[in-house]
Length: 195
Ligand code: NAP
Image (cartoon, rainbow, N blue to C red; front, side, top):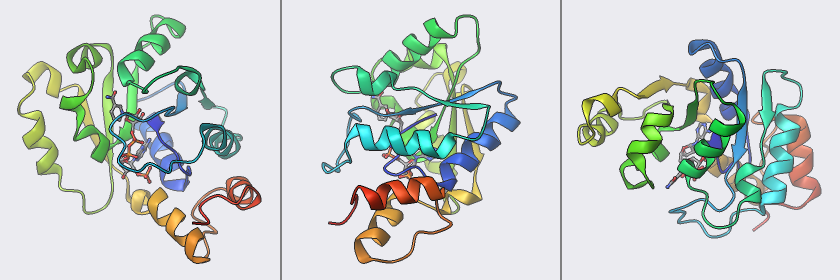
């Protein structure tokens, strides 16, 4: 489960649990991005905060774990490097890469996309209102064998977004019930998103 998680919220947790159920997964490993490639937004919270908030959020689900593999690696966090290293750690396991459909839309620009799609199945989580056709059009450029390695999954709970949570905090509006309490307390305690 890859994402910037700035901050992690219930939409992410519901996505992970739904993917685990639909694809019969043993475990979901949350991997906060170290230095996200192609990131337009420059003021991303420090990786230590995003890692801590992710750990607090997933704490109570024994099917969920958190990995700092991208945060510890220097340079941009390319998915291929992550999948190679997870593949070594979980040798013989089938690997799924769960993330947002908006991120997957850009997959043709990702490093070593064909190797990536050989090594794992992508689960692209969509928000309500997401235009699935745009993803289909992009994927039409991929070999048929590769495009079938990208599954889409509609997640109504993704009406919650990190962008909206950051904006709300900045405006002093409530974020209660949008993310786990421990994560909410953490971000207030550390004064995050008060721009
Ligand atoms: P992003 O642009 O911050 O997010 C794109 C959209 O997807 C946002 O609407 C976001 O909503 C949603 N999203 C992100 N992660 C999600 C998740 N795990 N579950 C459900 N929705 C999610 O994308 P990003 O976080 O930078 O990148 C996502 C993943 O793709 C990361 O693991 C990143 O390393 C990888 N990536 C790899 C490459 C590459 O290898 N070249 C390039 C780009 C991205 P929220 O803001 O609410 O999360």
